[in-house]
Image 1 (cartoon, each protein chain N blue to C red):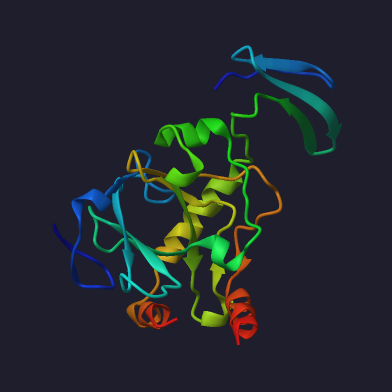
Image 2: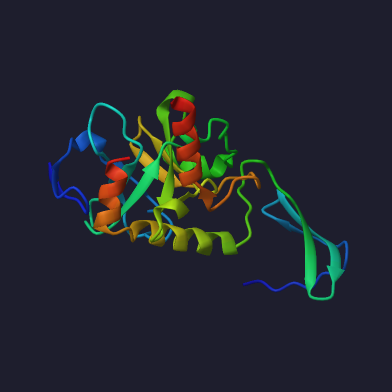
Length: 72
Length: 152
C-alpha cells in the first residue's frame, strides 16, 4: 500500500484519470471528493463485505423454506 | 448433463444453459460455473435458483426484480459490466438475490448488487450498482403481497 500525506484540498491522481481530493477534515472523519470516468466503479469497501454476507445468508435457506418458495 | 442440485435433487440440464462467472459471486468467489434453475419450465415462477455446478450445496434463490419493482433501473459502471462481454439490452438477464430469514415475512432482496448474465457470451457477474437509492435489504414479502392484492 502506498502511503501519502495530504493536507486539506490537496489531490492525488491515479492512472492519469482518477483524482481524489481531501474536501474536509472533521475530527475522525475525512471527506473525499473523487473524480473518475463514469465507467469506473467506486464504492465504500464495507459494501463488498456486506454483500458477501448477504449472499451467504441467501444460500443458507433450508429445504423447508425452499419448498415454500417453490410454491409461491 | 445430469447435475446434483441443492433443492431439486438430480436435475438434467442443457449444457448451453451453463453460465460462467469468471469472478464467482460475492462470498463464493471460487465458484465459477452456475446454472439458473426454475421450478417448472412453463407457467409462473416467482423464484429461481442460482445453482453452483462445482458445489451442490451452493444455491441462491433469486427473482426477476422488474416483476416486483417495475421501476428498477440500476446504473452499473461500464468497467464492471465489460467483464461479461459486449452487452446489448436484449442480451442481458437481470436477477436479484433473495434472503429468507426464519420468518418468510422478513424476506428481502438485494437490489444493490444484482446478478447480470449475458445470454450470448454465457458469462455472468454480480455487480454493485452506482445508485444510492437501491437497498441491500429491500423488503420483498410486502411487495409480493401488495402485487397479489392488485391482481385480485
